[in-house]
Image (tube, rainbow, N blue to C red; front, side, top):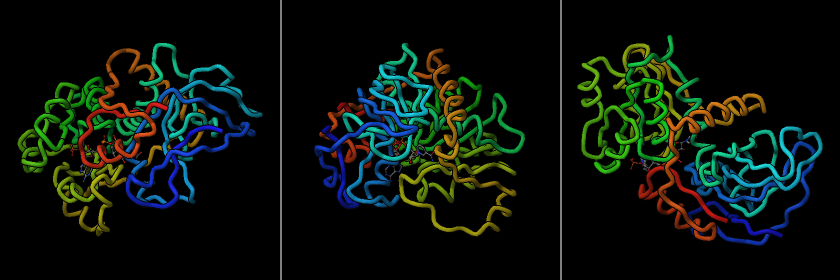
Length: 327
Ligand SMILES: NC(=O)c1ccc[n+]([C@@H]2O[C@H](COP(=O)([O-])OP(=O)(O)OC[C@H]3O[C@@H](n4cnc5c(N)ncnc54)[C@H](OP(=O)(O)O)[C@@H]3O)[C@@H](O)[C@H]2O)c1
């Protein structure tokens, strides 16, 4: 038996309950891992509220780090005793020990702590595919402007630093002046407090009227329309989240009038479809963290049993950087 957080119905943070659950032996292609730290992500909120459906009772959590206890048949890239970290389906990271598919679990370099590993895999691999693979026609070159919403969040602060390392001019939005200052400290070339400023007008001002080549938008409902107005002709609207709610249906014809724009809705798990693609992306993330160009900032730590408070704080926009749970 082990302790795990589960929910028995979709709903608010009060649905998150600590329970004793059974953990078995890993089957073919699986491992058993004992967590030392667990990552909190906004996707956990979508699963908890039922925006993404689950079968109940359901486990939650998609990011963690710890020690591999056992490996199932056919698993060759990990062995018992390895330090490891992952971003992976299915949910279940909110636990002391779990059995899970091995495909997306990577050996964690000795120089990277469990806490950092748990904080960075889902968010860092997301920034990896956004800045390296979710690109406008012709790609991004040093000096190009991109707009990144929620730049002081978990994904956001990693994006600010990685964009700076790539020579990009990241314009970051955030909901307070203090969050904007944090984004600038982490490499945002410019910031906009979208709670008090018109971000379209400010983007036009910063870019000399040209607009940005890409908008990376995880906020969704509240930022979608205005984000389209920030793009230069043939620019890319890269939607990857819905912290403020889902984007309303839109008419593709609108993209013509705004400059023949491109739109994509990306998810990390398409990029993590194979062991090889997962490892290649993780190696890139490990390298940029080992180089010191990207530092993983953990601003909130909660005991796993207090995960409901962690969810409340995340949804109330009280957090900055990454948040971890300690089993
Ligand atoms: N598709 C993918 O592959 C993928 C992967 C990872 C994450 N994501 C998405 O990326 C986003 C960031 O994830 P994260 O875990 O790092 O979270 P986070 O950015 O640390 O937290 C969410 C932030 O969104 C902003 N926000 C704007 N409107 C909001 C609202 N109405 N309610 C709550 N927050 C609001 C808040 O920052 P301000 O106060 O500064 O506005 C808040 O701090 C999420 O939307 C997540 O779903 C997508």
